[in-house]
Length: 341
Ligand code: PHE
Image 1 (cartoon, rainbow, N blue to C red):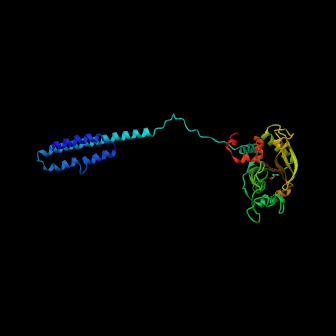
Image 2 (image 1 turned 90 degrees about the vertical axis):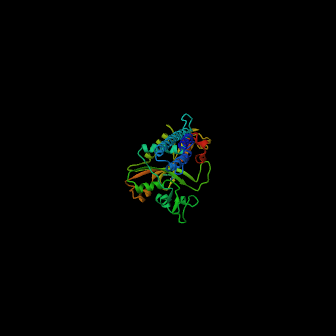
Image 3 (image 1 turned 120 degrees about the vertical axis):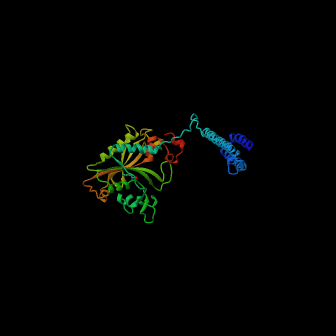
């Protein structure tokens, strides 16, 4: 029995210390120390020994068991340590490898122009409003003094949602004038940028969707001089000191008098060239003094209050601001074009 125990100890210690992984180690533990294990089998024979032999054998068997348990424990620790080391090695990050640079985009030139416009007006105490692109014809037309039958309401010009032509894609940002009058206390100074929609074919200067910036002031003693002063300042801030503007008489149902503002072509200085299509001037916006009917419909007394409004084409402004020749470039979003700004 003594030899048996010695043999088990020798064999077990050798194989245990060589166990390749925790699973193999566990198998060995079962093989030697388990219920049906080799050491257990020997211990079961203990009963056959004489009373004199038993204590010495028992002590020896316990020593062997302790030795095996200790070997299993220390091997388990070694395996865990080397597993951790292997994992650390596998998951190591080489901080010296060059990183993948994140490509940073930038603002679209039209929105850069819009940011500049907003800055200029916010600096003069204006509030920036946002409003719906799906609009009531009542606000897009009726409340702007363009009643039933007015040519601008034609089905061939605007996108309507219903047969009664009550709901539409706004054809201008001017309904924001009405929304401001209905919701804000006087005096009012607002701009309202946004998308507008018209049934136009796409070409170098037209698109069925484009952007406008509406502007409006209502206060006491507001005159056309305030309008011209503000718009001249806008032109100089946007396009540079000394930018020359021109105001031409025009007609809009919701302003009286009405005008259009042109800026002198930056390329030819007004002589006429391909950029301004020989005109010498580039049309930028429509404007005028708010029609008394429009004020009255908003319950504002035109005897006490007066105001001006303008609506400028944002694409056009960005084209002039960044010297872009074709409107389509603004929408196509070709990165090779956009990267130039
Ligand atoms: N809404 C007009 C247009 O789209 C522009 C405009 C706005 C004119 C405000 C006068 C006052 O052409």
